[in-house]
Amino acid sequence: MIKSIWLFLLLSTLLLIACNSKNEVLSELPLVESKGLKYISPFPFGASLGINLLKTKVVYRNVVTKEFNSITAENAMKFGALHPSENTYFWTEADYLVSFAKNLGIRVHGHTLIWHNSLPLWITNFQGDAIAWENLFKAHIQTVVTHFKGSVVSWDVVNEAFNDDGTLRNTIWQQHLGNDYVARAFQYAHEADPDALLFYNEYGHEYSSAKRTAVNNMVSDFKTRGIPIHGLGLQMHTNHIQSDANLITAINTAALTGLKIHISELDISLNKDNNQSLTLTDALAVLQAAKYKVIVKAFAALPATQRYGITTWNVGDADSWIRGTYNRPDWPLPFDDNYNPKPAYQGILDGLK
Image: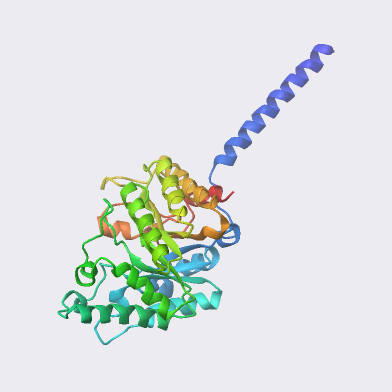
């Protein structure tokens, strides 16, 4: 009888251990059902959007509505899109985005006032003197900011002004306006809308210590001189083999400025080597999910007053700039081509825990 009791207890214990082990394994599987990131995240969570997709693709619009409470125009607010000729501004697409956001109570972050790419021909061919260049520079910034005043609450004022070695990039703006054009852009934007939060936006924080140092030095200089700046945008166009330590260092180093931090263009490439025959495997998806978790967790650990939010660069893999720009298969975003959440989405949820 005693032997039977001990045998029963032994079998019960083994069964309990087996069940617990099974539950632990199941807890690690992708559990992608959620009520929406905007309800789960303690800080704004968003995406950049393509206006045509927003207008024509119901599933795209539904995902945006369910998941996000902050949006950025992927292209519609860039110089070439808004200001195609010297005396013409084209507001239609950007206004559509702002109206969509307003109807849903979604925050709009403006991108971008000054960049060396996406410029119209009238800028690249402009032949004016230094005064004329300054006038058009100021007029563009202030016309755009004034148009969206009260609707766009924050701006990427200048985008990608530094090289990876920390030197100032030799752009059309630097050539015609001098090395201090970045500071003047912030001043002009602030004059047009004193209530708008102004960000400097840059890529490469996760791999270039020289660029991180240059950006932080610029912020220190601005503070000393009284130049209005409120935040830093870390684009985070990164990849699944980037080290966790580098990703965490990028976020924490930016936060040392005391400014608001925005993970502003997040995507995680799986095909950095441009392998044309690569396919998305479960193993790659798990690695990507782990990187999303690292980034979100590191950002969530910042002081609440500095967490401006996280923005992915578009919504589904089919919408990503990476496929077209590099002509390769890739799956960098939290949603797949059909807007179903991937393990990467679960990685975000895990990072928010």
